[in-house]
Length: 219
Image 1 (cartoon, rainbow, N blue to C red):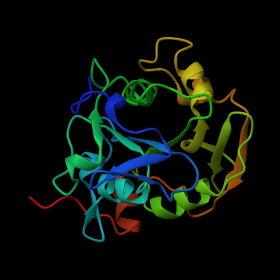
Image 2 (tube, rainbow, N blue to C red):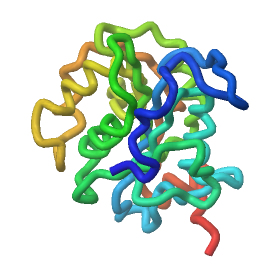
Image 3 (cartoon, rainbow, N blue to C red):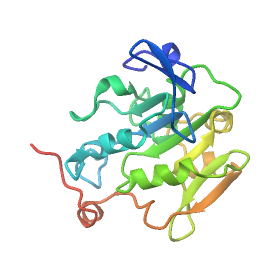
Image 4 (cartoon, rainbow, N blue to C red):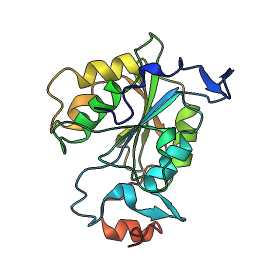
């Protein structure tokens, strides 16, 4: 259940209220974003959402990269201290630790009612180059169901992607999302594959984090 309530009270994707006035958003690409805050992070030893890069938590950097969206949903049990709760909708899968597909389902449920042309930016929180990844996705020419970045091994990164909301919702709702494989769930979607060497590296181990300049949160 979203901590801020659902986002149904927010403005339509193309507009947002500012100082009481409705203004046009300048963002290109998807008007909505879902940031997955990570699970137990057993290999890392710290919750990924709290890890720090250049003085900011990874979740804060992801939220910053999504600036200008109508709604940014963070799927996490809590927010790092440097994330302004007023900028996001906080939600979490129930029961907890159901895996990334369950997290996607929770994020989708926190968005306003769907429109036919809705698009959703989907990001794992553990991207060291999240701003570059978002910029590449915002400029993507979508396939029938969306677009995703591809790593140096030509592997689609389904959690660094921009989806047509209807396609993403249909794929996630096709079966119980708990502990379901991301590839099995999203691999059948018709996506534009975008080479993005250097932008897709995620952080699963302390060694990978150290190589990227990522450090644990201060005690």
